[in-house]
Length: 360
Image (cartoon, rainbow, N blue to C red; front, side):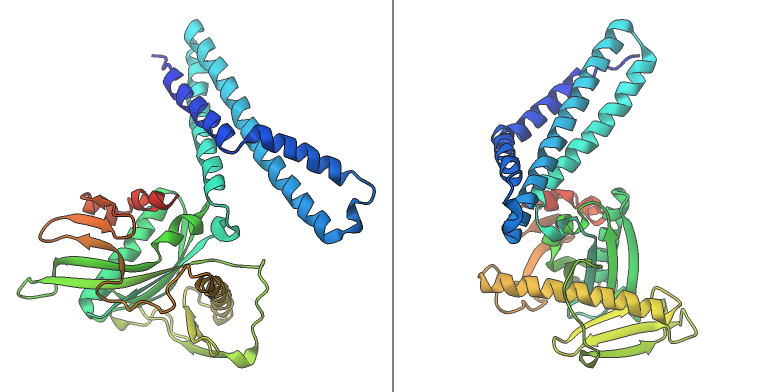
């Protein structure tokens, strides 16, 4: 049976036309022509700084215009192929249409993400730090549930994950965890989840099976590798080594290969235990530290612009960004957008896009 993709094609036509109008491509084509004319003048490079800005604008406009023209071209080809497949009852051509329309849907989604995530760091991998609040085993188990939620989210998107350091609780859960998620716009997608997450449930660790409220903080930082001007001085670093531990406290490695680095001026602590080599763990820890310092500079700039509170919120009641209620009813509520969903199991299994998209 040959599938008619006319409806899907119509939706893609509408989507691309929306992009064309919303991004004002006709006007941008005119701007590009004017900038290119300006760049062709003999004295253009006399003012190097201004010339670089103009060339940067040209590059961005060219990329945007070329991308949307490519989408339109691919769509026209699919439209013609679909028509020919239907008229000629060509199964092979119809199969090719199925593949191409799937690829185009992905390309359109990627183009949309590029227009949404315009900050320099948005395209970078994300570093996730999770710390339980007060509450011992209960909060530590909640922190572990959150880590699993983000890991499952990444798996569903075929994003790469890597645990940098993890410290397990004595009975259950984790005392802290740092891991990376690497995929297209990973940081841009996840940065809105930075904050305190609250869980209400009947505790599996309470003999009386009473209702407990737990908190855990989630920090999201872009993973910076090279393109950043942050200098670290040895005198500002306290470097310690220790043995990696698994659940229950057993040692994973028999040598002191794990590394903990404290940045003395800021008090930021980073740890890495993923490698058997102390040198490799130190290198990774320094990369994480630079990324955390970069994020700190961004946060400080936002504070000056009055975009953030001047005091860090306590990991406790009233400061949460999202609540996960498992008892006496089931609901997850984002306190910033007011969005409420009842599919608690699905969300905890990684289906968090419904919350992330509210900020796009």
